[in-house]
Image (cartoon, rainbow, N blue to C red):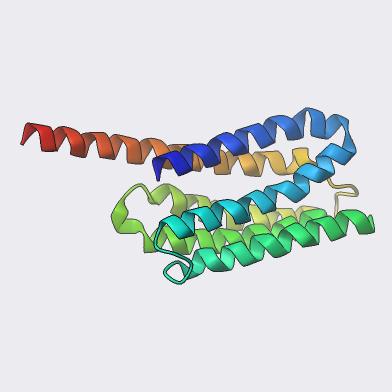
Amino acid sequence: MQTYYFTRAAVSVAWIALAVTVGQATPLIGAVLLVLYPAWDAAANYLDATRAGGLRVNPSQTLNIAVSSLTTLAVAAALLAQAFPVLAVFGVWAVLSGGFQLATGVGRWRSGGQWAMVLSGAQSVLAGAFFLKMAGAVTAPAAAVIAPYAGFGAFYFLVSAIWLSVKARRNQDSALAG
């Protein structure tokens, strides 16, 4: 899990860097980044679920994969329609995927390090509500608007990775000492 969480954090940081630099300067790249963000989330949840027993054992992640995949299509459609409901789409997605992430974290509570996933899921729900509120005021989508949301996600994945790494090291040290 540590490698998975480190990878999720690193991809999010790279996405943020691209969003606030190239994505802001070049609207087409910014639009592509907006489509890629939920697509990456779907792929990452698929990898996590398959490594944690499969899709049947992880129904919240299976639902999250479906929601993130549909969101990818909805973001692309919103951008193509030039109606600019992208923040609303991201808001609905953040609420739903955050709820599923919260459920996954609670379901994995015993394995440790999942408190960060629980906090991340709850924060995602709140951020989604904020995006929905902002959706009426923003006239054009911008990846940079989503960057702080991605930043919190990266932070929580990094905390989970570090937490699990420290826990594994302590267990290893205990086994060697005992």
